[in-house]
Image (cartoon, rainbow, N blue to C red; front, top):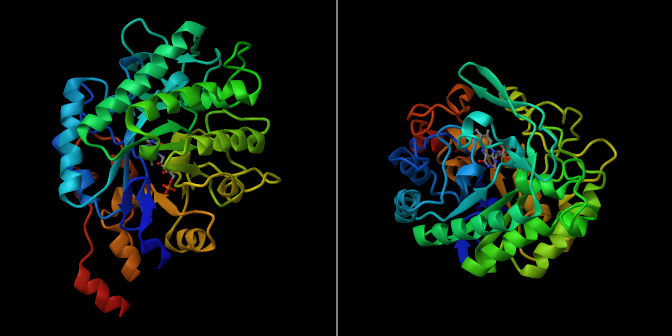
Length: 385
Ligand SMILES: Cc1cc2nc3c(=O)[nH]c(=O)nc-3n(C[C@H](O)[C@H](O)[C@H](O)COP(=O)(O)O)c2cc1C
């Protein structure tokens, strides 16, 4: 299988092309530091060619969900070092995903008195499921011009802590309707200053964050996650091909290690359903083109010389096809990695897969996090011999 072949990614050689997608699982402590459970969870999955950590917040104002992790304090950095050490000790490679959620913050998740911030004062559709039901995203406050550079600096600072914790690299989350994505797309960015209007302006914030992180850790240790067709919270763009072609060309010029594109293989006519409902209904993850829109991965492939990782709704067969036909170098798996710690081995022998349990996605404990069974190797080989 091509998926099981090695791949050079920046300075590291991956042992296969099966990537663990970033998965926020709310297993941090009250100060947003990863617990021992987190170290166990990732070490269990270290047979992946690459692990991309859950989205980690770069500042107190960039967070939202209770018990989601962050990396902007010394204490968080030390806790992450234990996670990275346990992955490395098990032979794995791990990048840290960094994010600012922007308008997808809840008032209850921010420091007292703060409002969510965004390029423009337009609320995200939907919210986050809490114990008492859905808490909706409020209307955010438009960022003032002088407030943007400090957020870029937060990305740089957080990347320096990632490096010091021993991570092999950093993935900047510019996808899924979070702050950078809100700047990129013209439905959520209505600014009239140098961060709004033409794509050169809308991409400025992303590229400044990328340059800041490169200055800290080097381009060959940087990846960027993009979701040109994600619109589950009513983010959208009038010209996804134009917007993302410009972005990918600029990323290519900087020589970053990889781009990570969410694009479902299926045309997606249900893109306006909020993400929490889509995940519960086991949809493909929700980042596909509308009928009439082109598949972007092959277009982006031509514009980018580094590694291209694809995601959203892939399985063993479709991932192998994507890598064999060459429009992806690697494929990442989200939900399959929640429930199958040994996914490469299962793919290799063609074994059956464990189903993920949605009810434990965000519960703050070991159940549904470190207790999914590994393959019984002998039984699996006998079945598929
Ligand atoms: C529980 C859960 C948590 C997720 N957390 C993140 C995250 O922290 N960062 C991110 O970029 N995507 C996140 N995603 C999206 C996944 O990385 C992935 O794009 C999505 O599950 C679709 O891929 P799949 O079809 O292989 O599951 C999350 C998805 C799930 C189900």
